[in-house]
Amino acid sequence: MPIAKITKSFVDKQSFTDKGSVLYADQELPGFYLKVGMRSKTYFVQKDIRGRSIRRTIGRHGPFTPDEARRIAKDKLYLMAQGIDPAKLEEEEQQKLVTLQMVLNSYCNTRRNLRDSTKNLYRYQLEKYLSDWMGRMVVDITQEMIVARHSLIGKENGEDTANSVMRVLRAMFNHAHATYDICEVNPVTYLSKVKAWFPSRRRKTYIKPHQLPKWWQAVHALENDTMRDFLLFLLFTGLRRGEACALRWSDIDFNDKTYTITKTKNGDPLTLPLGEYMFALFKKRWKRYGNYEYVFPGPGEHGHLVEPKKGIYRVIQNSGVVFSCHDLRRTFITIAESLDMSQYAIKRLVNHRVTDVTGGYIIFDVERLRDPVQRIEDFIVEKVRNNV
Image 1: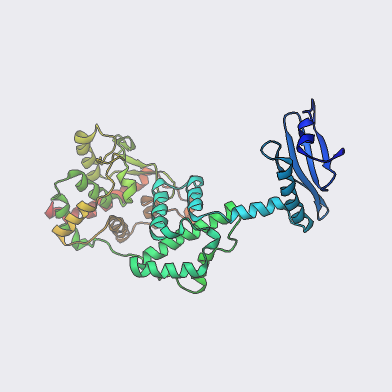
Image 2 (image 1 turned 90 degrees about the vertical axis):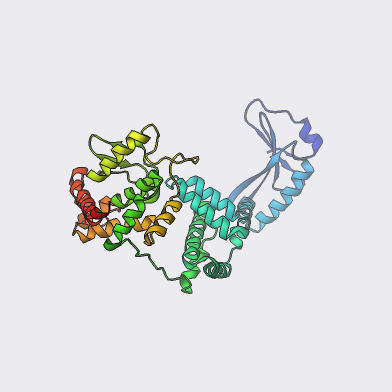
């Protein structure tokens, strides 16, 4: 290998090669080199670290002068003499610059199985309750900070909200470790070690049978027939709000008397039969709203009903029955269980995955679920018959 004093005049005089490259070792700084190739002249350093020859590029001639490259080479060679790979050190330093906002963006961009609504919820929770942390380096967020903020959110915004925010943050730290190789120990797990999680109080509210007539009357008194039919659809099917809101006319098969939810929480498409009451209701809606894309059209950018709070509030006022959309789902499940339906049928109706071994061998087609659906419909109609 040629040895030369690597100066600007020397580098400028070297012609590009016709083939391959020529390496020049600097005569003053061992380990500092110039590579002249067919299209570029590049500075680099090379030194053995633990028995392995490591080469690290500094940069091309032009953007770097020989003097600048030499100064950088000295720093890199100093680290290499101590057994430190400068490239890995630089990578570690870059990793330390990863902010919570960067992790959130990466998480939402790479998790393709997540629905947009879930991604929006995660963004909302972090940017609302941890807004002052979004620009902070992830490695600077400590377990003490997490315990304190968890407690503060619990006091000011509710314990369920605090737990939910920290579960999202825990997912962000797991993603940071998998993607950027930082935060090997997830600091959110400290909440478990010190038993700081707020107790989970699962809601058990639903509309009781004796409340159904008043609720039914109040729903049918709504002036907005889309809101009315939407709430009835939730009661008769047990669907989640988001799944029902986005139902398209193309998802309904009037010949088979079925409907299909293509985007569900667990990712499994769901085709179910329509009971006689809901079939008649959809036939009536088709005559009025069949020219719309969605069964429950709305004025917003989505094109369909998104938030039924106003209708729910009006029904609560007029009936005295306090409920939410998910309470209608619980009501549906409670009615199904009261009719002694099999757990496998109920799980299929509400699209819960069957996790036990026996359930894995049971296949429910649409027709086998038609009778359970009709029995639930008949139960509801019987309870409200005198109040329709």
